[in-house]
Image (cartoon, rainbow, N blue to C red; front, side, top):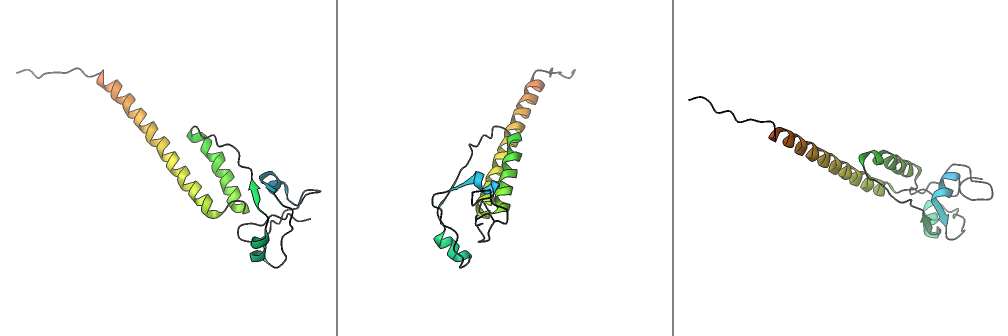
Length: 131
């Protein structure tokens, strides 16, 4: 049986559904349906009108350093590509992630500059020219 998940573009997921379930493993982990209405066979527009509400389980977001960003972005890319996440939402997440990465870079640069300034300020000896 084919997965019953309908992507944001109206197309249906092509993966095989789990036994005794209407979703494939990817969508079963992300979505639980509040109603078990099968998709309407009149096309994507009808599917959207009659589609039951979906509840998406979003894991807690723990981004504490730049190294935490790649897995988060990879997950976001997969969700956009599979149709689980709307591309506009993915774009906003990408933009905000870029801003967060930039703030990490600026913070790191400021810390390096302060360290260099502390090292330099203690190493100079004032030399007065002979007159």
